[in-house]
Structure formats: C-alpha cells, structure tokens
Length: 528
Ligand SMILES: NC(=O)c1ccc[n+]([C@@H]2O[C@H](COP(=O)([O-])OP(=O)(O)OC[C@H]3O[C@@H](n4cnc5c(N)ncnc54)[C@H](O)[C@@H]3O)[C@@H](O)[C@H]2O)c1
Ligand SMILES: O=C(O)[C@H](O)COP(=O)(O)O
Image (cartoon, rainbow, N blue to C red):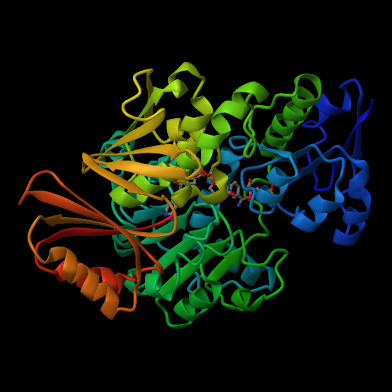
C-alpha cells in the first residue's frame, strides 16, 4: 500500500531525500496551490508537509479523510489547527531545533542593519545619492538588549549579542534567578526588560497571552529612542501601536521579519524610513531548510515503518489496554496542574507527583504528562500537550518526579501534586468520586472537596468570627454569586482557608477589595 505525501510549501530537495528514497512512499511537491486547489487535492494524501505559508485549517483537515500525519518543517505550528488535527487522530510533528541558528543569525543581522541604517543607506546610494549625514547609526557595545522570550532562539540571540559586548536582560516565565545567572544574563519582569532596554527583541510563540504583548502601553515604558526587532511572530507587536510610536519619535527604529498578516498586504509601516523589513526569512538558509526537511522526512518515514515519531506535538502514544484504565484520570491530572500554576502564580523548579491506590500498579507516565500539560499551558498554549509536555518541562529545567504507593490514603485512587517554586512548596490532591467525576480533596494541608472547574477563589485568612460573612457580603455587593464554599483551618483561631466556586469571573478590582478585608491574608482567582 503506497503512502502518499503532499508537500505544499517549498522544502529543501536535499532534506526530503530520505522520503524520496523510502520504499512504498510517493511524494508530490506542489508549492503554488491555492487554498481551494489544496482543499480539492488533499483527500488523496496520507501526509502533508508544510512550512508557515500553508494554512492547515479545520476546514482543510475535514476534507482530508486519509490524512494521518502533518509535518511542519519548522518551529511554529500556529498555522496548523492542532485541536482539529488531534480530534481527527492526525499526528502533527515539527522540527523544533533545525532553524534555531538561522533565526538567531537573522535576528542579529536585522539588529545590526537597523542600528547602522544599512538598508536605508543602500537604497539612497542606489538612487545615485552620496549622503553620509542622513545615516548616522548607533553602536551596540555597552547598550542593553532586552529579550522577551528566552527559549532556544532568545538564548542564541543573547549569546551572539554578548559577543557584541551588549548587556542582556531577559524575561521568560521559565527563567529564574539561578538559570539567568548560569546563562550570564540579568532577568526581570516584562516591564523591567522594556524599561532597561536600548534594543528590544521578542522570541515568544504567538499565543493568546503574547498577542499584542508589545502594545501602546508597552511602548510608553520603553526608553525614548528604543529600537525593536521581531523575528518571531507577527502579532506579538501591535503594528498600529508601533506605527504611532515611530511617528511620535518614541521608537527610533524597528526591524520586522514577521507580520500580523502574511503575505503582507498593508505596507503602511514600510512607508516609515525608520523601519526595515524582510519577508519572513529567519529560517531561509540552505542549512536550516535542509535540517528541518530532514527532521520531518525522517519522522514520516519512521511513522510509516514503525508507527512512531520523534517530534510529535499533539498525540500521546499509550497502549490501548493501559489507556482504558488511566484515561478517566487524564482530565483530573490536567486540572490539578493548572490549579497549582494559578494558585502559585509562578513556574515550578520541581514537581513531585504522588500516585496512591490502584493507580500505583500502572504506568502513570501519561497522567504525569497530562498534569504537566495543565501546568505549562498557561504560558505555552497549544504548543504544549501531553506528548511534548515532559520534553518541554525538562528543557525548562523543571525536575519532575513520580512517586507510587499502593496505600489507599482513604481513597481508591489519589493523585497528589507538590510544586516547589521560588516562593515555597504548595500541593493539591485529587480523586474521582464514583459517578461524581473529578474532585480536589486537599489543598496544602487543608481537607476540602470541590469540583476543579469554573471560576474559583482561594482565600487564606485568620480564623476569626465574621471573616466568612464579610467575604460573602462583598461578593454579593459585586453581584458575584457563590455556588459552593469550603472552609478549613489548621486549628481554632489559627490559619484558615476558603475555597469558593463563583458564578462569574472576579475581576482584579474585586480581588483587591477582598484583600483589603480584615484578617484576609491572600486572595487568588483560579479559572479552570
Ligand atoms: N522568523 C522566522 O523565520 C522564525 C524562525 C524560527 C522560529 N521563529 C519563531 O520564533 C519563536 C521562538 O522560537 P523558539 O524556537 O525560540 O521557541 P521556544 O519554544 O524555544 O521559545 C519560546 C519561549 O517563549 C516563552 N514564552 C511563552 N510565553 C511568553 C510570554 N508571555 N512572555 C515571555 N516569554 C514567553 C516560552 O516560555 C519559551 O521559552 C516562535 O514563535 C517561532 O515560531 C520564527
Ligand atoms: O516557526 C518557524 O519555524 C519559522 O517561522 C520558519 O517559518 P518558515 O518555515 O515558513 O520559514
């Protein structure tokens, strides 16, 4: 049975060599298909290989009844509807490392070209002018480069910028003081980075949280004359805010390789002489394209021959028998992970997962991966799933340990997750109650019992008369209805907690009002 592969974006011929010469695999490379033509052709193929140009939408996937694997020859999978692929049982693989170096080098080229106004000077010379006064640049030496997003490419850019004797300050949800020191960079919040930087470069995925991360508010806190680079994803910088910031003189230069809409249609930005641009070329080198094409080709061959892949970004590989016994706990494990990320407001350095009861006799790795997915998804969105969660956690230096005990601890099965963060240790335990679904039954050392879903408030307070009533009164005044309320205390008059589920999201102002109430120690909103 021949395995048919359609390549709809330009992949390196050298890179697809393993595919072209694999038994039983037929390749068609058609890189000029319109969306409609692709939708017509896709049904006849078992695999689709793309870069960033082809939009692999839910509509396209629904037409691809034979599709078994999608290969992304690059990092970003935001042009692929992962949920739709997973729902349709289609494995998605990418090539997370193959173009890192090229993208970092392109970022440095854009940084230096912008600092010395090279494209502008070249265009002027091409028009026959010899104008040396108009293109006075700035040095990089002793200037501060602010890096927002300190993963593979962010770190490679920082290493190169240090070679230019720049000072580096970085922000990344997974960057801690210890890691920053080891990498020889300063670190801080996004605001710290934007305030300190002479040059800002962004290297995050495009997520709900990072869309327009650099907006008008962000430009306000930056230094006058700041210069900014985006070789990551269009949309991280609000292009309309950038236009205004350049016009006002706040931003002295911008170097863009990616755009909110690609191919670019609104060229307004390029009318500004302070802006230089390239058409999404960060990974466009022979070396990078060969590397990423080899990576995805090898995964397709491995999938055809053995049913396994290396760089899956969406599907778990769990034996059917085991899946039947642990699948009911997947959702609980994920919710505990998200609950703890929101409860701590920090990323973990160490995670200990304790399985007690019958679960202790099973391979619980997929449950741990689901819990990690819940823990990481706040910052990595659909880039993390139960297949790559452990890989990403390890990459971020999060130590993950599993512990098992057949001791029942009062429940047939109990999953306890303990996280160690910069601020201390927190934990939560959950179980499945027969016929009532997932429940969280312990938070830190307090016994509770609530559904881990919807809008939750976790309140730490001193055990005094009237505290609970005041909380209820304030929420009522804000028209926030309490669905359930759990209270627990270490001892009479001691530390205590409230765990509330409320009917609508409590906004920051409501939380601030609650924190002002007498005897309230902390208030944390958790939306699961
Ligand atoms: N221009 C190009 O041709 C080109 C080439 C390669 C990669 N890219 C893009 O560059 C980006 C980075 O690629 P990578 O390989 O370094 O990915 P990566 O996953 O190694 O690093 C991304 C980092 O962003 C961090 N992050 C997530 N949300 C954040 C936030 N709100 N604030 C700060 N940091 C946040 C993550 O923790 C992670 O460490 C991706 O979007 C990728 O698609 C573009
Ligand atoms: O996410 C990536 O890998 C880059 O944006 C490269 O995209 P490309 O494969 O379209 O060059």
